[in-house]
Length: 206
Ligand code: HEC
Image 1 (tube, helix red, strand yellow):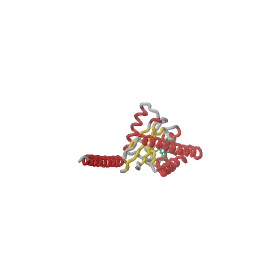
Image 2 (cartoon, protein in one colour):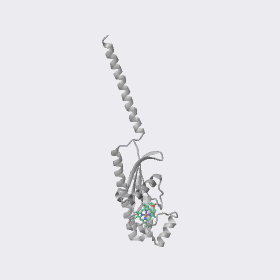
Image 3 (cartoon, rainbow, N blue to C red):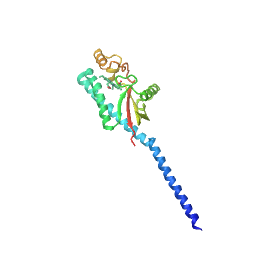
Image 4 (cartoon, rainbow, N blue to C red):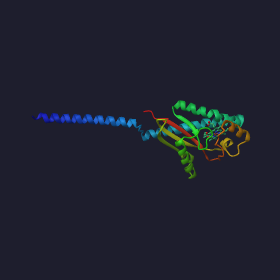
């Protein structure tokens, strides 16, 4: 008579524990489906993106300067025209991310809605006196149905850029640019303006 209640308590405890384990399991499953991502992961992905943007910018500027020196600006146009997409493609292949440059006044690559919204906020912050280094942003969103980490960083217009993006572009250069990019919007910039941005899309694979 005395043993029966103990047995039933044991049974109840066991059932409760089983339910708890199942509940934990389903909660974990659901959080995986929602592609939750920790603050630590966000800061790691941000840092990796900053490194990547720096690498892209440095490689490109090196090639641009070398081409300007050896062949002049007309030859350098081909660096931007051919090398920029090639470098981006190579870095994308190495990392598995999509890496590109874009602008509110694009020559080649139009921004998507997110890029545009971010670059508009950069323009405001730039006007308010924020330094270029701080003009970056990140987000988690779906890109083509894939949960992705996105990063964007503003690019400063330097003196060397004005040869092809400034106000007084030499006629021979202007002709070449119009020939390659009939819908070019990327002129009229001044030193210190935001020329555009590096944009990076990292698919989140769990
Ligand atoms: C010799 C001419 C030339 C110079 C100098 C030059 N660019 Fe460009 N730029 C181009 C061409 C051509 C493209 C389009 C090629 C591409 O990216 O696919 C371009 C595209 C870009 C883009 C991509 C967004 C868009 O408008 O399509 C950015 C950002 C950019 N340039 C920034 C710069 C910066 C910053 C500098 C100075 C460090 C610079 N460029 C110097 C010719 C030039």
